[in-house]
Amino acid sequence: MKFVALIVITSGEHEESLKTIAKNAGARGATILQARGSGSEEKRSFFSLTFEGNQSLILYILEEKLSKTILKTIHKATQNEAIECVAFTAPLTHIVGLDQTLLRKFEDSIKQESDL
Image (cartoon, rainbow, N blue to C red; front, side, top):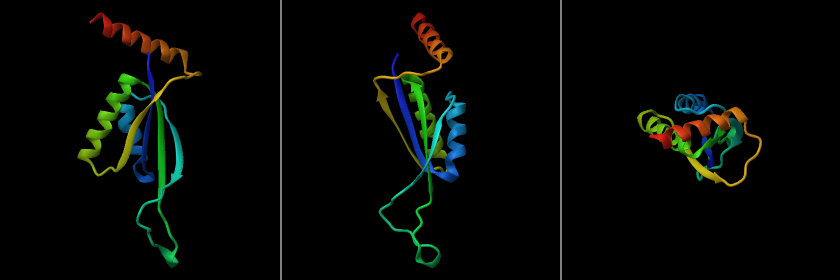
């Protein structure tokens, strides 16, 4: 069974929408990191202080096939709505600490697919 990290980087205002989209596509839990972005254009705000805005990094550890489904769903949603984000996957070669019931669920779904 192959696992990947699905990483979604978005502005803080779109975080909840993207978590809902991923959850509806099958994602269970995520780790959310607050970040600051650095763009090519400097943004000016009050008293000429720079402000780049809040960024959120949403990290999912998923089975590879499920990650593709979720990534496609995010892509479709961002095409239809005014949600800006960058989403990508990265392969994981070694992983420990996953919930055993989740692993069994993935194994059962793979067995059902192979029986078709």
